[in-house]
Amino acid sequence: MHRLTGVGASPGIAIGVAHVLASRVEIHERRIAVLEVDAEIARFEQALRDTDEQLARIQAQLAATEGDDHQYRILEAHRLMLSDVHLVERARRMIRDEQTAAEWAVRKALDQIQAVFDKIEDPYFRDRKSDVALVGERLLRTLVGRREHASAEHAPKGCIAVAHELSPADAAQLGRADAAGFCTEGGGRTSHTAIVARALGLPYVVGVEGLGHQVWSGMTVVIDGFRGEVILDPDEEALRRYQARAAVHGARSQRLAAIRDLRAQTQDGSVVHLSANVEMLEEIPIAVDLGAESVGLFRTEFLYLERNELPTEEEQYAHAVAALHSAAGRPITFRTLDLGGDKLPPSVRIPLGTNPAMGLRSIRYSLKRTDVFRTQLRALYRAAAEGPTQILLPLISGVAELRAAKDLCAAVRDELRRQNVRYAEQVPLGVMVETPSAALITDLLAAECDFLSIGTNDLIQYALAADREDEHVGYLYHPLHPAILRALRQIVVGAERMGKPVAMCGDMAGDPMLAWVLIGLGLRNLSMAPRQIPVVKSIIRSTEIADAERLLAQALTMSTETEIEELVYGAMNRRFALELNDGEDDRPTG
Ligand code: PEP
Ligand code: MG
Image 1 (cartoon, protein in one colour):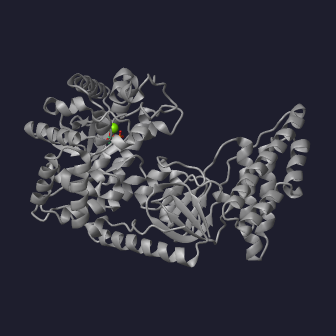
Image 2 (tube, rainbow, N blue to C red):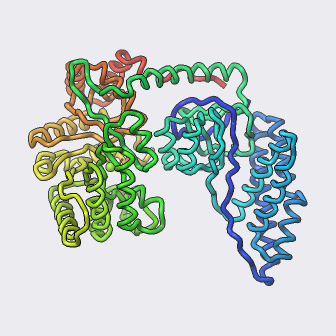
Image 3 (tube, rainbow, N blue to C red):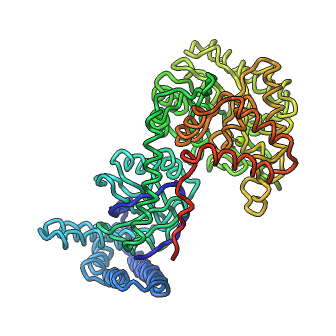
């Protein structure tokens, strides 16, 4: 048994047999000049040495921890492959005789070796092909200096997919193949792949150093997406413990799946509209499947973050129309570009200033770069003709910004009309309330827009002056701070006074612990990560509005976030033990 630590990117426990994905690096044929041959061979040899060093480092880590002999020997074999004549000599000869770039020579040599493995009947030796692929792809990654995505084809049902890196598309494919979970050496908690994993409800651990050389297909693996741990070859006791935890989660998921098609209606008949926050097209069918009644927040900037060029109007239009088709008649609220701050696309230069979170970001950037903004608005008004659409403006801090954005929207509609382009004239325009100023003047904003949506992620950071990205001030970031509760109440009252609907789309909306506080505040429209919908719905369905209102009223009498948290978490844990218990108390030792 061997426990590796990474970062939990999608919660849950998965137990299964490892399926190691040979992550094939994309290599294109490249020729070199005769004069460059010696330098190219030197580069190849340096890559061999660097790759060997990487493997030696992992071996040393292994020896320093549990000293698993079997894995140590596998690594030894992998290192030997780096001096194997079939690989090294063949590649060297190709560089010299055919004047090819080193990576192309390695790719060709690998293909030839793997073709030989394919002909072997014995399954044990045939499976060694994945070892050659692991070493070969590592060498190629060293040569090209980058990481490439794995292919997720042919993953067996219930497997734990293991890869160097996974693309969001791979994750979606693994979900379709019914994989139980996955883990990668690279990747990050906030990567798009992690978003897809969370949407699919598949446990995912990222950043597991040395993973690729300590696991092989067929090995039993446990993924603990809560704690960011991967357990290779667990002993019986550990296996039993994780099976028990997995059973708690499984039972909970089944209970929740049973209410999938039911409405989020309280015991006394109030209906809460539950919608999904999505960043990528792949998430929409998953959200629909989980019971999302609409897409309450489509973070459009993700289309910009993934590419080097700005997306064209046609691309954005096609993307929005595809989203609307995928939502099959459910309305989509497209939030306009929220770039800047921590979201910096390679295609535009945004001055960071000394404090990017308070700098030229979001609607401020859009109103400065009206060419970029108008292109997006044209695409959205055109797409709106193809399905129910709303447009939502992020980070509005005053009425002037709202008016400026509305003027641009009107100008875009005028232009489309004059050009005889098909578009929708009536598209509800909403304002995100995520700055303290917007919270204080919600009524003024509500008077001039069609709907509001509370972005608590930003509202909390600005109201409490605690950067949401900075772990040093993370201790200040409390959704249940009295100031936040008061701000939320003021927003809801302000919107109601003007007769405008108000939703919440920050992470607070999807926290089942906070469901009563939000309902008590009068919120009836919550947009959240798709995976949260069933549990929040389950809580709402067993709620009496009066209970929620009482809890909120009591919370509003308290002076500190600690008191309020004790009150709210205590009440929710007592009342919803089944929904909220995820078996986390059963912490393993060792
Ligand atoms: C928010 O700030 O609450 C929000 C929903 O927007 P984002 O998380 O994309 O900043
Ligand atoms: Mg925000």
